[in-house]
Length: 455
Image 1 (cartoon, rainbow, N blue to C red):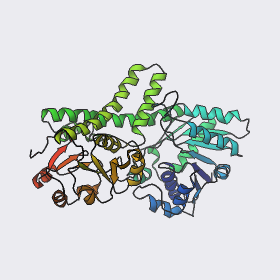
Image 2: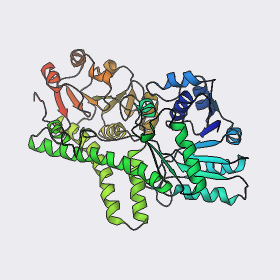
Image 3: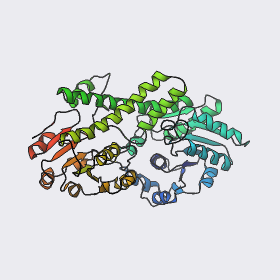
Image 4: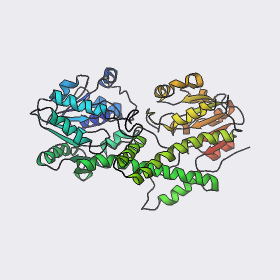
């Protein structure tokens, strides 16, 4: 095995292949995509996505054994192992719209592989897919009457944006699913051997294909469930005077529960959580498991509720109207240390503020280009300003929606002096020093905590 290719140069394919190239200098790794502009950026050593540490890893292997190309047929023909990392968004049309995964790009990739493969291939599902998608790919490969043997593996990613390079270098686990046949086990071992170059063998888990595919959906569903659970308690805390951070600390010390993903906020975002949960809901519904579907659907419903509630609190506390008031939204990425805005809570919050006729100003250190695309239909109802101090000038309120370290370090005394009075801060990530802000004169509202108000 000497050649690896990846179809798809996005948030998963690019970083994953860069890490494999870094750790396995004897393997030739080629990343392909139909987007020539994206490939050019990767090939220049300036990745088109923001991820701490990514550019350095890319540049370390670029031109040595890491290559980027739009020639997908040639990359397929040359490869021994083909990773498929194309987009699998939620369907917006037809059967299963709003819940099922749109697999059209995945099927196109499979048909390309069938068309251009001239030798036996190990095909690795890297995209997040519904359980038993490998079966569909197997059927496509068998339909062409080709003498080439294809072995399909499932190798889902468990990357968190913002820490993706660390997650790739020191993962909690690598999961590889294969068919329980002689050829399936052999193919699975080939992939195990690649990862074992730098990952301890005990962290590389092997399963059957279906367990691997379903594990990815279940992992994201469980993480999102914890966020929605603590957010539901945050509303109860606000109504009773309890503090959600104290609650989280109290229950997080229980070894059966643990402290991770118990931070109250305006909710989860990103490309995976909502999409994967709705996919799980759809799978359960198609299997007639209505109670299972309803259970997981409520996780998404609570997340949507938390974002709508945040806007309602802003309107209510600002004298029941924000029409004509300048509101500076600090942070549009769905989390810190990424420029990704897919399903960001800031989208729903910004739209909610604009619907109340507020003058919304969006600021973010890495996500403004994506923010403009997300809110393009709002026209002049929103403006964009990279400098948070300029965004806050003349504002009636600040809404902190991404927990960038940059925002924790702002000179809030300077910001307060430039704002309209009374000045409000709504901390949607509970990342600021609320007592200190109140001392400066702000009216401070956070998630699941008492308000610090001068009114």
